[in-house]
Amino acid sequence: MQIEGGKKVVKFKQAIIAAGSEAVNLPFIPEDPRVVDSTGGLELRQIPQRILVIGGGIIGLEMATVYAPLGVKIDVVEMLDGLMAGADRDLVKVWEKYNSKRFANVMFEDEDHGR
Image (tube, rainbow, N blue to C red; front, side, top):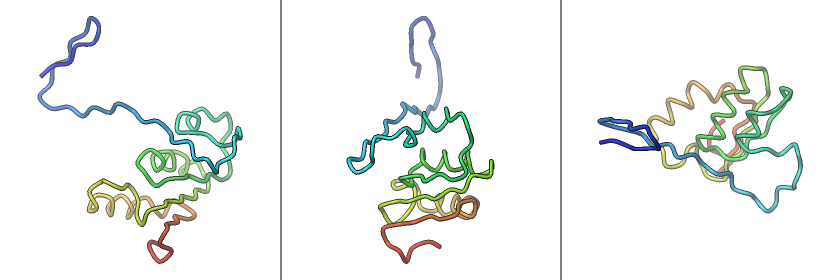
């Protein structure tokens, strides 16, 4: 297979197309410069002491794993009963084993889940 983009042609046997994502605007979150999406999270001028990640999806957790090693206390809140909905549950368990200890709190809708 191949993809043509402008003057370039990229040939491949297999590909993962990561077309990007768009942050969801939650109506209960105030308009505030301290509230950023993943792009804004990469553009912070100073490393904050603490970050609340709303959503336990892949992009939010990616941001959390960027900032946690820098000494930022990370809280993650997810409305479902687990992280990375739609991902293979066995792989999520492996990710949780190695990464969830980096975070101060991981909170779910079901308070009995997790830590």
